Length: 461
Ligand SMILES: [Ca+2]
Image (cartoon, rainbow, N blue to C red; front, side, top):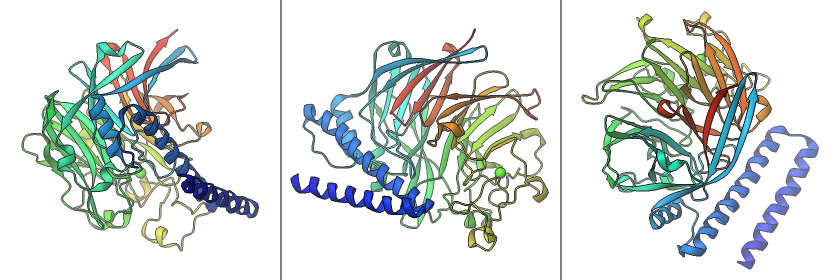
Protein backbone atom coordinates (compact mmCIF):
# COMPACT_ATOMS: atom_id res chain seq x y z
CA UNK A 1 0.00 0.00 0.00
CA UNK A 2 2.85 2.35 1.02
CA UNK A 3 4.69 1.63 -2.25
CA UNK A 4 1.53 2.17 -4.26
CA UNK A 5 1.05 5.58 -2.68
CA UNK A 6 4.66 6.61 -3.39
CA UNK A 7 4.34 5.45 -7.01
CA UNK A 8 1.06 7.31 -7.44
CA UNK A 9 2.62 10.42 -5.93
CA UNK A 10 5.54 10.30 -8.38
CA UNK A 11 3.23 9.71 -11.35
CA UNK A 12 1.08 12.70 -10.37
CA UNK A 13 4.15 14.83 -9.64
CA UNK A 14 5.72 13.99 -13.03
CA UNK A 15 2.41 14.69 -14.78
CA UNK A 16 2.16 18.08 -13.12
CA UNK A 17 5.75 18.90 -14.18
CA UNK A 18 5.08 17.77 -17.75
CA UNK A 19 1.76 19.66 -17.83
CA UNK A 20 3.52 22.79 -16.60
CA UNK A 21 6.04 22.49 -19.41
CA UNK A 22 3.40 22.10 -22.13
CA UNK A 23 1.21 24.82 -20.68
CA UNK A 24 4.26 27.07 -20.96
CA UNK A 25 4.86 26.23 -24.60
CA UNK A 26 1.07 26.35 -25.20
CA UNK A 27 0.41 23.10 -27.09
CA UNK A 28 -3.36 22.98 -26.85
CA UNK A 29 -3.79 19.41 -28.10
CA UNK A 30 -1.29 18.08 -25.57
CA UNK A 31 -2.93 20.15 -22.84
CA UNK A 32 -6.23 18.48 -23.79
CA UNK A 33 -4.63 15.02 -23.56
CA UNK A 34 -3.10 15.82 -20.18
CA UNK A 35 -6.49 17.01 -18.93
CA UNK A 36 -7.92 13.64 -19.96
CA UNK A 37 -5.15 11.75 -18.19
CA UNK A 38 -5.71 13.72 -15.00
CA UNK A 39 -9.47 13.16 -15.17
CA UNK A 40 -8.78 9.40 -15.49
CA UNK A 41 -6.81 9.45 -12.25
CA UNK A 42 -9.65 11.26 -10.48
CA UNK A 43 -12.22 8.76 -11.81
CA UNK A 44 -10.20 5.79 -10.61
CA UNK A 45 -9.66 7.30 -7.20
CA UNK A 46 -13.34 8.24 -6.82
CA UNK A 47 -14.56 4.80 -7.91
CA UNK A 48 -12.05 3.24 -5.55
CA UNK A 49 -13.28 5.41 -2.68
CA UNK A 50 -16.92 4.59 -3.43
CA UNK A 51 -16.29 0.89 -3.54
CA UNK A 52 -14.08 1.03 -0.46
CA UNK A 53 -16.84 2.77 1.48
CA UNK A 54 -19.48 0.25 0.52
CA UNK A 55 -17.01 -2.57 0.95
CA UNK A 56 -16.44 -1.67 4.60
CA UNK A 57 -19.82 -3.19 5.34
CA UNK A 58 -19.96 -5.90 2.75
CA UNK A 59 -16.38 -7.26 2.73
CA UNK A 60 -16.28 -7.93 -1.00
CA UNK A 61 -12.88 -8.21 -2.68
CA UNK A 62 -11.96 -5.04 -4.51
CA UNK A 63 -10.67 -4.85 -8.02
CA UNK A 64 -11.23 -2.25 -10.69
CA UNK A 65 -14.13 -3.75 -12.60
CA UNK A 66 -17.88 -3.51 -12.51
CA UNK A 67 -17.92 -7.05 -11.27
CA UNK A 68 -17.65 -5.42 -7.84
CA UNK A 69 -20.69 -3.27 -8.48
CA UNK A 70 -22.61 -6.26 -9.79
CA UNK A 71 -21.68 -8.25 -6.68
CA UNK A 72 -22.53 -5.38 -4.38
CA UNK A 73 -25.95 -4.91 -5.94
CA UNK A 74 -26.58 -8.65 -5.71
CA UNK A 75 -25.63 -8.53 -2.05
CA UNK A 76 -27.90 -5.53 -1.40
CA UNK A 77 -30.68 -6.68 -3.71
CA UNK A 78 -31.26 -3.07 -4.68
CA UNK A 79 -29.56 0.18 -5.78
CA UNK A 80 -30.16 2.96 -3.25
CA UNK A 81 -30.62 6.55 -4.50
CA UNK A 82 -30.55 9.28 -1.82
CA UNK A 83 -32.27 12.67 -2.01
CA UNK A 84 -29.75 15.48 -2.56
CA UNK A 85 -31.59 18.75 -3.13
CA UNK A 86 -34.39 20.66 -4.79
CA UNK A 87 -33.43 23.41 -7.23
CA UNK A 88 -35.65 25.81 -9.12
CA UNK A 89 -34.64 27.49 -12.35
CA UNK A 90 -36.90 30.22 -13.70
CA UNK A 91 -36.95 31.48 -17.25
CA UNK A 92 -39.62 33.80 -18.67
CA UNK A 93 -42.92 32.56 -17.18
CA UNK A 94 -41.78 29.05 -16.41
CA UNK A 95 -40.35 27.33 -13.33
CA UNK A 96 -38.22 24.21 -13.75
CA UNK A 97 -38.17 22.32 -10.46
CA UNK A 98 -35.43 19.71 -10.16
CA UNK A 99 -35.47 17.10 -7.37
CA UNK A 100 -32.17 15.28 -7.47
CA UNK A 101 -31.30 11.86 -6.02
CA UNK A 102 -27.95 10.15 -6.38
CA UNK A 103 -26.28 6.83 -5.69
CA UNK A 104 -22.76 5.68 -4.93
CA UNK A 105 -23.16 2.17 -6.19
CA UNK A 106 -23.00 2.46 -9.98
CA UNK A 107 -19.52 2.77 -11.50
CA UNK A 108 -19.72 2.21 -15.26
CA UNK A 109 -18.10 5.13 -17.10
CA UNK A 110 -18.85 5.40 -20.80
CA UNK A 111 -17.04 8.58 -21.74
CA UNK A 112 -13.76 8.80 -23.60
CA UNK A 113 -13.25 12.44 -22.90
CA UNK A 114 -14.86 13.63 -19.69
CA UNK A 115 -15.42 12.21 -16.24
CA UNK A 116 -18.73 10.36 -16.36
CA UNK A 117 -20.08 8.13 -13.63
CA UNK A 118 -22.62 5.37 -13.47
CA UNK A 119 -23.75 5.52 -17.12
CA UNK A 120 -27.30 4.14 -17.10
CA UNK A 121 -30.48 4.19 -19.16
CA UNK A 122 -34.09 4.48 -17.99
CA UNK A 123 -37.61 3.64 -19.16
CA UNK A 124 -41.15 3.64 -17.74
CA UNK A 125 -43.66 0.78 -17.99
CA UNK A 126 -46.36 -0.78 -15.81
CA UNK A 127 -46.17 2.20 -13.42
CA UNK A 128 -42.51 1.42 -12.77
CA UNK A 129 -39.24 3.16 -13.57
CA UNK A 130 -36.64 0.78 -14.98
CA UNK A 131 -32.92 1.44 -14.83
CA UNK A 132 -30.17 -0.51 -16.56
CA UNK A 133 -26.51 0.26 -15.94
CA UNK A 134 -23.86 0.24 -18.66
CA UNK A 135 -22.63 -3.05 -17.26
CA UNK A 136 -26.05 -4.72 -17.46
CA UNK A 137 -27.45 -4.41 -13.92
CA UNK A 138 -31.25 -4.24 -14.39
CA UNK A 139 -33.50 -2.80 -11.70
CA UNK A 140 -36.89 -1.16 -11.18
CA UNK A 141 -38.90 0.86 -8.69
CA UNK A 142 -42.62 1.34 -8.43
CA UNK A 143 -43.42 4.98 -9.20
CA UNK A 144 -45.38 5.26 -5.92
CA UNK A 145 -42.17 4.46 -4.02
CA UNK A 146 -40.26 7.39 -5.51
CA UNK A 147 -41.95 10.04 -3.36
CA UNK A 148 -39.47 9.49 -0.53
CA UNK A 149 -36.01 10.59 0.60
CA UNK A 150 -34.48 7.27 -0.41
CA UNK A 151 -35.42 5.37 -3.55
CA UNK A 152 -34.49 1.71 -3.83
CA UNK A 153 -34.27 0.24 -7.31
CA UNK A 154 -34.90 -3.50 -6.91
CA UNK A 155 -32.50 -5.79 -8.73
CA UNK A 156 -33.86 -8.17 -11.37
CA UNK A 157 -31.53 -11.09 -11.97
CA UNK A 158 -30.90 -12.11 -15.56
CA UNK A 159 -28.77 -14.25 -17.82
CA UNK A 160 -27.15 -11.18 -19.37
CA UNK A 161 -23.67 -11.80 -17.97
CA UNK A 162 -23.80 -15.37 -19.20
CA UNK A 163 -24.93 -14.23 -22.65
CA UNK A 164 -22.40 -11.41 -23.13
CA UNK A 165 -18.87 -12.60 -22.59
CA UNK A 166 -16.48 -9.91 -23.82
CA UNK A 167 -14.66 -8.47 -20.79
CA UNK A 168 -15.08 -4.79 -21.77
CA UNK A 169 -18.83 -5.16 -21.16
CA UNK A 170 -18.26 -4.97 -17.42
CA UNK A 171 -15.07 -2.90 -17.33
CA UNK A 172 -15.38 0.15 -15.08
CA UNK A 173 -14.10 2.64 -17.63
CA UNK A 174 -15.45 1.31 -20.89
CA UNK A 175 -17.25 2.70 -23.90
CA UNK A 176 -18.64 -0.80 -24.49
CA UNK A 177 -21.72 -2.15 -22.78
CA UNK A 178 -25.42 -1.32 -22.65
CA UNK A 179 -26.58 1.51 -24.94
CA UNK A 180 -30.34 1.71 -24.34
CA UNK A 181 -33.47 0.13 -22.87
CA UNK A 182 -37.01 -0.09 -24.26
CA UNK A 183 -39.99 -1.83 -22.69
CA UNK A 184 -43.16 -2.44 -24.66
CA UNK A 185 -45.75 -5.19 -25.19
CA UNK A 186 -44.53 -6.84 -21.96
CA UNK A 187 -41.06 -7.28 -23.44
CA UNK A 188 -37.80 -5.68 -22.40
CA UNK A 189 -35.27 -4.77 -25.08
CA UNK A 190 -31.63 -3.89 -24.38
CA UNK A 191 -29.03 -2.83 -26.91
CA UNK A 192 -25.30 -3.12 -26.39
CA UNK A 193 -22.14 -2.27 -28.26
CA UNK A 194 -20.86 -5.74 -29.03
CA UNK A 195 -17.17 -6.53 -29.28
CA UNK A 196 -17.24 -9.56 -31.57
CA UNK A 197 -13.43 -9.60 -31.85
CA UNK A 198 -10.55 -7.14 -31.82
CA UNK A 199 -11.34 -5.69 -35.26
CA UNK A 200 -15.04 -6.47 -35.45
CA UNK A 201 -17.78 -4.59 -33.58
CA UNK A 202 -21.51 -4.16 -34.01
CA UNK A 203 -24.72 -3.52 -32.12
CA UNK A 204 -26.85 -6.31 -30.74
CA UNK A 205 -30.38 -5.97 -29.40
CA UNK A 206 -31.51 -8.52 -26.82
CA UNK A 207 -35.08 -9.27 -25.76
CA UNK A 208 -36.72 -10.97 -22.78
CA UNK A 209 -40.30 -11.35 -21.62
CA UNK A 210 -40.83 -8.91 -18.77
CA UNK A 211 -40.56 -10.59 -15.39
CA UNK A 212 -39.66 -9.11 -12.00
CA UNK A 213 -37.74 -12.16 -10.73
CA UNK A 214 -35.55 -13.21 -13.63
CA UNK A 215 -35.01 -12.03 -17.19
CA UNK A 216 -34.08 -14.63 -19.76
CA UNK A 217 -32.62 -12.69 -22.69
CA UNK A 218 -32.12 -13.93 -26.20
CA UNK A 219 -30.87 -12.23 -29.35
CA UNK A 220 -33.55 -10.08 -31.02
CA UNK A 221 -31.54 -8.27 -33.69
CA UNK A 222 -27.91 -8.02 -34.74
CA UNK A 223 -26.37 -5.87 -37.44
CA UNK A 224 -25.65 -8.00 -40.52
CA UNK A 225 -21.99 -6.91 -40.60
CA UNK A 226 -19.35 -5.89 -38.14
CA UNK A 227 -16.87 -3.08 -38.43
CA UNK A 228 -13.37 -2.20 -37.28
CA UNK A 229 -13.75 0.24 -34.39
CA UNK A 230 -11.19 1.82 -32.06
CA UNK A 231 -13.58 1.35 -29.12
CA UNK A 232 -17.26 0.86 -28.30
CA UNK A 233 -17.97 4.56 -28.71
CA UNK A 234 -20.30 6.13 -31.28
CA UNK A 235 -22.14 2.84 -31.73
CA UNK A 236 -25.70 4.13 -31.49
CA UNK A 237 -28.06 1.43 -30.27
CA UNK A 238 -30.92 3.85 -29.56
CA UNK A 239 -34.22 1.98 -29.11
CA UNK A 240 -37.54 3.74 -29.66
CA UNK A 241 -41.17 2.59 -29.74
CA UNK A 242 -42.84 3.02 -33.15
CA UNK A 243 -46.23 1.76 -31.93
CA UNK A 244 -47.94 -1.53 -32.87
CA UNK A 245 -45.29 -4.25 -33.24
CA UNK A 246 -42.46 -2.07 -34.44
CA UNK A 247 -39.24 -0.74 -32.96
CA UNK A 248 -36.86 1.90 -34.28
CA UNK A 249 -33.14 1.28 -33.84
CA UNK A 250 -30.47 3.92 -34.54
CA UNK A 251 -26.91 2.94 -35.39
CA UNK A 252 -23.76 5.06 -35.21
CA UNK A 253 -20.70 4.77 -37.44
CA UNK A 254 -18.25 3.53 -34.76
CA UNK A 255 -15.86 6.33 -35.89
CA UNK A 256 -15.33 4.40 -39.11
CA UNK A 257 -16.93 6.75 -41.64
CA UNK A 258 -14.83 5.48 -44.53
CA UNK A 259 -16.35 1.98 -44.49
CA UNK A 260 -19.83 3.24 -43.73
CA UNK A 261 -20.15 5.26 -46.97
CA UNK A 262 -18.38 2.76 -49.19
CA UNK A 263 -20.51 -0.20 -48.15
CA UNK A 264 -24.18 0.67 -48.56
CA UNK A 265 -25.43 -2.67 -47.20
CA UNK A 266 -23.98 -1.77 -43.79
CA UNK A 267 -26.51 -0.65 -41.21
CA UNK A 268 -23.97 1.63 -39.51
CA UNK A 269 -25.02 5.28 -39.67
CA UNK A 270 -28.64 4.35 -40.34
CA UNK A 271 -31.98 4.26 -38.54
CA UNK A 272 -34.06 1.14 -39.16
CA UNK A 273 -37.60 -0.01 -38.38
CA UNK A 274 -37.85 -3.62 -37.17
CA UNK A 275 -40.95 -5.79 -36.87
CA UNK A 276 -40.96 -7.31 -33.38
CA UNK A 277 -42.50 -10.56 -34.56
CA UNK A 278 -41.00 -11.25 -38.01
CA UNK A 279 -37.77 -9.30 -37.32
CA UNK A 280 -37.97 -7.99 -40.91
CA UNK A 281 -36.57 -4.50 -41.14
CA UNK A 282 -36.43 -1.52 -43.46
CA UNK A 283 -34.03 1.41 -43.54
CA UNK A 284 -35.75 4.64 -42.49
CA UNK A 285 -32.87 7.08 -42.94
CA UNK A 286 -29.12 7.18 -43.55
CA UNK A 287 -26.07 9.46 -43.44
CA UNK A 288 -26.05 9.66 -39.63
CA UNK A 289 -22.95 9.86 -37.49
CA UNK A 290 -24.41 8.86 -34.14
CA UNK A 291 -28.17 9.35 -33.67
CA UNK A 292 -28.37 9.04 -29.89
CA UNK A 293 -31.80 10.70 -29.72
CA UNK A 294 -34.81 9.53 -31.71
CA UNK A 295 -38.48 10.32 -31.24
CA UNK A 296 -41.46 9.17 -33.34
CA UNK A 297 -44.53 11.43 -33.62
CA UNK A 298 -47.31 9.09 -34.62
CA UNK A 299 -49.86 11.91 -35.09
CA UNK A 300 -47.53 13.80 -37.44
CA UNK A 301 -45.84 10.78 -39.05
CA UNK A 302 -42.48 12.38 -38.35
CA UNK A 303 -39.25 11.08 -36.84
CA UNK A 304 -36.95 13.60 -35.19
CA UNK A 305 -33.39 12.62 -34.47
CA UNK A 306 -30.62 14.31 -32.54
CA UNK A 307 -27.09 13.30 -33.37
CA UNK A 308 -23.53 13.99 -32.42
CA UNK A 309 -21.41 15.87 -34.94
CA UNK A 310 -17.60 15.64 -34.99
CA UNK A 311 -15.87 18.77 -33.59
CA UNK A 312 -18.94 20.98 -33.90
CA UNK A 313 -21.94 20.12 -36.03
CA UNK A 314 -24.39 18.41 -33.65
CA UNK A 315 -27.72 18.19 -35.48
CA UNK A 316 -31.48 18.10 -35.02
CA UNK A 317 -32.97 16.36 -38.07
CA UNK A 318 -36.58 16.08 -39.22
CA UNK A 319 -37.71 13.08 -41.22
CA UNK A 320 -41.20 13.55 -42.70
CA UNK A 321 -42.03 9.96 -43.46
CA UNK A 322 -44.85 10.50 -45.99
CA UNK A 323 -42.55 12.34 -48.40
CA UNK A 324 -39.98 9.58 -48.75
CA UNK A 325 -39.59 8.02 -52.16
CA UNK A 326 -35.89 7.39 -51.55
CA UNK A 327 -34.25 6.74 -48.21
CA UNK A 328 -33.58 10.24 -46.81
CA UNK A 329 -29.88 10.97 -46.42
CA UNK A 330 -28.56 13.35 -43.76
CA UNK A 331 -25.14 13.65 -45.31
CA UNK A 332 -22.54 12.27 -42.92
CA UNK A 333 -19.60 12.25 -43.64
CA UNK A 334 -19.82 14.20 -46.90
CA UNK A 335 -21.61 17.17 -45.34
CA UNK A 336 -21.40 18.43 -41.76
CA UNK A 337 -21.25 21.79 -40.03
CA UNK A 338 -18.46 20.43 -37.86
CA UNK A 339 -14.78 19.71 -38.56
CA UNK A 340 -12.67 16.63 -38.00
CA UNK A 341 -11.12 16.53 -34.53
CA UNK A 342 -7.79 18.29 -34.38
CA UNK A 343 -8.34 20.28 -37.63
CA UNK A 344 -9.61 23.57 -36.26
CA UNK A 345 -8.06 25.34 -39.25
CA UNK A 346 -9.36 22.84 -41.90
CA UNK A 347 -6.71 20.98 -43.85
CA UNK A 348 -8.04 19.91 -47.29
CA UNK A 349 -4.95 17.73 -47.87
CA UNK A 350 -5.44 15.59 -44.79
CA UNK A 351 -6.53 12.00 -45.27
CA UNK A 352 -9.77 12.59 -43.33
CA UNK A 353 -10.91 15.47 -45.56
CA UNK A 354 -10.14 13.53 -48.77
CA UNK A 355 -12.49 10.75 -47.65
CA UNK A 356 -14.94 12.94 -45.76
CA UNK A 357 -14.83 16.55 -47.02
CA UNK A 358 -17.43 17.85 -44.53
CA UNK A 359 -19.01 20.38 -46.89
CA UNK A 360 -21.09 22.86 -44.96
CA UNK A 361 -24.10 22.79 -47.25
CA UNK A 362 -26.10 19.56 -47.18
CA UNK A 363 -28.64 20.61 -49.81
CA UNK A 364 -26.08 21.35 -52.57
CA UNK A 365 -24.83 17.77 -52.31
CA UNK A 366 -28.27 16.14 -52.34
CA UNK A 367 -28.68 15.73 -48.58
CA UNK A 368 -31.27 16.97 -46.08
CA UNK A 369 -30.23 20.03 -44.09
CA UNK A 370 -30.49 19.74 -40.31
CA UNK A 371 -33.34 21.91 -38.97
CA UNK A 372 -30.76 23.11 -36.44
CA UNK A 373 -27.06 22.55 -35.92
CA UNK A 374 -24.77 23.48 -33.05
CA UNK A 375 -21.26 24.91 -33.47
CA UNK A 376 -19.65 24.38 -31.03
CA UNK A 377 -21.33 21.08 -30.26
CA UNK A 378 -23.40 20.63 -27.11
CA UNK A 379 -22.79 16.84 -27.09
CA UNK A 380 -26.46 16.39 -27.92
CA UNK A 381 -28.03 13.27 -26.44
CA UNK A 382 -31.71 12.28 -26.07
CA UNK A 383 -34.91 13.94 -27.26
CA UNK A 384 -38.34 13.54 -25.64
CA UNK A 385 -41.71 15.07 -26.50
CA UNK A 386 -43.35 17.02 -23.66
CA UNK A 387 -46.07 18.89 -25.60
CA UNK A 388 -47.73 19.00 -29.01
CA UNK A 389 -44.78 20.67 -30.73
CA UNK A 390 -42.44 21.00 -27.73
CA UNK A 391 -39.48 18.79 -26.93
CA UNK A 392 -36.66 18.52 -24.43
CA UNK A 393 -33.21 17.72 -25.75
CA UNK A 394 -30.39 16.71 -23.41
CA UNK A 395 -26.72 17.57 -23.71
CA UNK A 396 -23.56 16.12 -22.20
CA UNK A 397 -20.09 17.67 -22.66
CA UNK A 398 -18.49 19.70 -19.88
CA UNK A 399 -18.83 23.39 -20.83
CA UNK A 400 -22.04 24.87 -19.43
CA UNK A 401 -21.50 28.18 -21.30
CA UNK A 402 -21.68 26.36 -24.64
CA UNK A 403 -25.03 24.75 -23.76
CA UNK A 404 -23.48 21.50 -22.51
CA UNK A 405 -24.92 19.70 -19.44
CA UNK A 406 -28.26 21.40 -20.08
CA UNK A 407 -31.78 20.87 -21.26
CA UNK A 408 -32.69 22.52 -24.55
CA UNK A 409 -36.42 23.14 -24.76
CA UNK A 410 -37.31 23.41 -28.41
CA UNK A 411 -40.69 24.25 -29.98
CA UNK A 412 -41.39 23.74 -33.68
CA UNK A 413 -44.00 25.40 -35.86
CA UNK A 414 -47.05 23.27 -36.72
CA UNK A 415 -45.51 21.93 -39.92
CA UNK A 416 -42.12 21.19 -38.32
CA UNK A 417 -40.38 23.43 -40.86
CA UNK A 418 -38.69 25.64 -38.30
CA UNK A 419 -37.89 26.11 -34.63
CA UNK A 420 -39.94 28.95 -33.15
CA UNK A 421 -38.62 28.82 -29.58
CA UNK A 422 -35.41 27.58 -27.95
CA UNK A 423 -34.69 27.85 -24.22
CA UNK A 424 -31.58 26.55 -22.50
CA UNK A 425 -31.95 25.31 -18.92
CA UNK A 426 -28.64 24.53 -17.17
CA UNK A 427 -28.71 21.24 -15.24
CA UNK A 428 -24.98 20.84 -14.48
CA UNK A 429 -25.27 17.16 -15.36
CA UNK A 430 -24.25 15.18 -18.39
CA UNK A 431 -27.73 14.08 -19.49
CA UNK A 432 -27.40 10.50 -20.65
CA UNK A 433 -31.05 9.52 -20.76
CA UNK A 434 -34.52 11.04 -20.27
CA UNK A 435 -38.12 9.90 -20.13
CA UNK A 436 -41.43 11.75 -19.97
CA UNK A 437 -44.20 10.17 -17.90
CA UNK A 438 -47.43 11.58 -19.25
CA UNK A 439 -49.62 10.18 -16.42
CA UNK A 440 -47.72 12.25 -13.84
CA UNK A 441 -46.57 15.04 -16.16
CA UNK A 442 -43.08 14.28 -14.89
CA UNK A 443 -39.71 14.22 -16.62
CA UNK A 444 -37.00 11.90 -15.33
CA UNK A 445 -33.36 12.38 -16.21
CA UNK A 446 -30.34 10.17 -15.64
CA UNK A 447 -27.28 12.39 -15.22
CA UNK A 448 -23.80 10.95 -15.21
CA UNK A 449 -21.84 13.81 -13.66
CA UNK A 450 -23.08 12.80 -10.18
CA UNK A 451 -24.87 9.47 -10.84
CA UNK A 452 -28.09 11.41 -10.55
CA UNK A 453 -31.71 10.51 -10.97
CA UNK A 454 -33.53 13.82 -11.42
CA UNK A 455 -37.30 14.35 -11.23
CA UNK A 456 -38.29 17.46 -13.14
CA UNK A 457 -41.56 19.41 -13.01
CA UNK A 458 -42.19 22.24 -15.45
CA UNK A 459 -44.74 24.77 -14.14
CA UNK A 460 -46.07 27.83 -15.88
CA UNK A 461 -46.27 30.72 -13.41
CA1 LIG B 1 -25.99 15.93 -41.39
